[in-house]
Length: 369
Image (cartoon, rainbow, N blue to C red; front, side, top):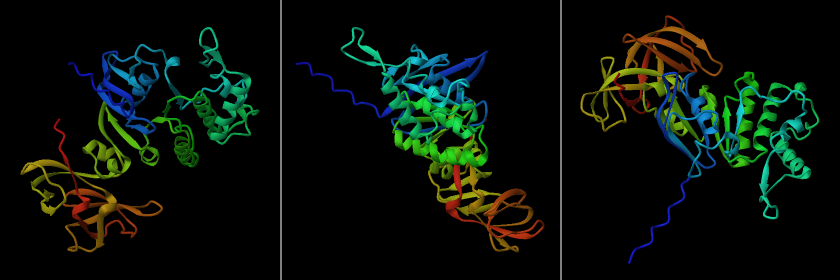
């Protein structure tokens, strides 16, 4: 008797990117990249300019086609599906609003073309009624905080308000995935911080998947459920923001996410690391004996005190800059220039000691080049 195949478990991932490579004019922009994105997550693609993050977003949207590999949405391959038939919408840094239309009509544009299932019709679909369109637009405008702005000329709005209109236009068609390509890049610092919180709130209210592209580490750490760090078309690390910061996978991630002191060392044995002529206790294990490694020490994790002989390294303050809630200092010790953050000011030329506690030392596999 032949047993029936076991039913396949529905994946938690709404998007599966499998072995995607993209080549432009002989240059590999994405290199055999694979990634799964879960339903309802706020995922940020983070990396320097030219790392491939926007190209990946455009591949998901359908504005580019991969050289090889496949992208799946809800288990179905989408490479051959045109952008307008994909269950995604995109918000760009440049708002791309229609200047001759008011806010209401800008948001309505996509809905006028939208068709919904209707079994009573011969073709099985129908267009939305005017009331259905108005209801959807009003809900979208309320969600982005512009419920009284429908009649306004888009040219009379501030940059932040125009960005909200662009977001409303993208979400009004109820996509399963919202793609955001550096949407806050054109805003000033204060407004950008406000919009970070508003976007996070919108994500919570909508409950759909957000894929956000940025080169700004603060944006990524503030808003995301998961951060995907990219460099030169390759994913460097995928993790929650705190893990990305506290446990970077390699020196690139450590250097790109926040301020870091990155040194070379030797793992003498479990819980023992040697660097800058000292042998210190750490909390890491599982490396080969005497394996060469990279070490990350965050500036805020170094204890600094006046005078010599109080810590592991004696040094001299080279520069001291007030950053609002702390002082950031460059300290030369054992021929290495440490970056140190402290609420106590130490002036340039002052003799100091640096103490590094075990759980502030993060050990990483050395990248061989």
